[in-house]
Image (cartoon, rainbow, N blue to C red; front, side):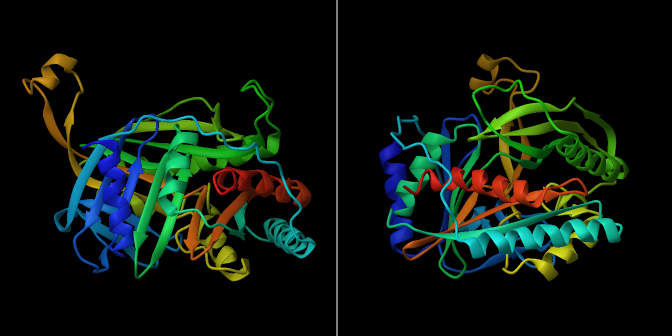
Length: 371
């Protein structure tokens, strides 16, 4: 399918108020879309179906599914075009909004000192006027953030969300898996050769230790890389890659339950931090810091084969794959307003003013495409 036809399909789907998701995985040129053929709200609890899942932050709420069997699956190659976007700079938010977030952060720091919470991720939302068409915003995200998972998700009974997330929750191919610990943030200033403070290093180590420890019962082997600095939009993060093999006793559902919500978007201990968030944040995160992505799709595996054989279908094998991402750097569109969501990890060493500034810089990632 041509790129023009692809975008015409999803534009028509949106105009007809029919559910769909369009997306591109990191560092790829192919864009894909599932165009649901009815307006039903499908959910999954066992994660055995095939399709695209969209899960909220609160794991007690339902995960939405766009089922493969109820959808048209289309794809196209998308060549990134030059976007002449203005460089965004932090603007003055209302003093009430700033003070509200600083007060929340201070409350989180106090809870860490007085309880067994080691880390809690606290967030806020911000509403911005935008008259751009959602598909135009989607194209801007595609052109601007080629290393992120970029998506546009719509259901008439739920809402319209877009994002460009840098964080993998879980990728599986057969019994092979990969995930990542992503935490710590600083502004990008032209180089990856930066120093990280102990606060950011500790925050990232909390996430790594949690994932490795909690996956041990589900794996035959597990490996982790050394922390590395990566760029995501105008920000830098610390990333540890974690890979391995699931054992025969593990299930996809149990692994998801173990990982989500991760300490990178919730905190530690997970349940204590989650309850603090639900009781003290003054809004409903909905799908922000939830997860989304391909569930149980069939793909040809290129592992241990040369490219020519795969193209000729000589030795290619078909495997079931899932590619799930944490829903960060996202927005919800409603009429002429975009609500963006931003947050940061709070530890005993956090500074409330610095945490506020971190959310300001994170907000620029979505604001950049809303100009």
